Length: 216
Length: 263
Image (cartoon, rainbow over all chains, first blue to last red; front, side):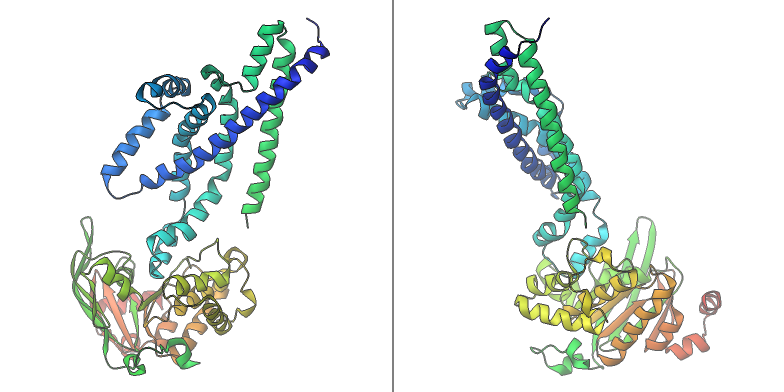
């Protein structure tokens, strides 16, 4: 096996395209999982079980089935029901939905960790419930869960290559395409491996900076 | 300063003058599982009075404050505050009546994500609809009163327990309640910080006409500020009277036992 810098150079244009797709999937997937996870967590706190029960069943189902199966389902079955989306959109929704069922658990723990005295003080001050959530409970809960959410961002990054299975040309998709055309596997796979490490590392630095800012 | 804390310009000042009955609990029963904490309790507090609830832990004192603050609901009975029913009542009615009541907690319960100033202005602005600058001006006055004028922009975690509790007192007063509920407000403080908080409360008791309902284990404080002391045991008031009578000449054996243990 010998290392061919020429192959690296040839791969780079494809790599940049793939990187852009991976980062898009990661950013949008994270956003969806953060928002949707919070929605699930709040719905699980409603007093009526007619809300809690269906949300519980659906999220449990999504959390306990493989992401790959969900991606295939969204990509190949939804169009039969008349819902056709681009491969990347499908991938972003799939990964965001899947991880939202994890982030909801993180939010739940964060919300439960806010001392009951905070709720009592809000009641004593007559703050409306919605206001209490918005300015008292959630700011404290979210501050607590940033590190855990960050871990899921990195886990999500490592799951983005699955989007290749539904024809998305992320970094791995581009590497495979290049390899198949040029019969050179070492260089493109090494390049994207290094890229994954760098993105994880930068994400963790960003996260630590954010944690520091959130701590008083 | 005296009227500043209590005075509410929309109301006739006479409303707050001592004499009228402000709080009434009728036949209140509260159970936690099989444990009956309050058993058909009746009692009332007159406006402007300072009433202290004493007794062994688990005797239902704190539960009374929590019932009045609507942090928990009674199983039976009726609660009236300032002529308006607090239980049973609709959520809307509860919100109205609750405006008349403020509470200071054992653990302070300041909002750690807000500055001291914002802790105090949040409720006046969002609940009472006060303009922000007016609420802030008032908050600064109150911080001055509690001796923390320089801590406006600090966060609760930067304050000592005693300072946090003073802020909590200012926060409760900012809502201009008619009744201030004090739930063992010095129990969580380091011993050297207790006196400062109690002195502040003595000041407030002396210079305002706010009605106070205190649960405390500080018997000297109870003796100083109370117009009336209620001795609780097993969910019932077993003896009540002036502090002189309760502390110097209690009639009930349980009261005597309790006082000799704590004094």
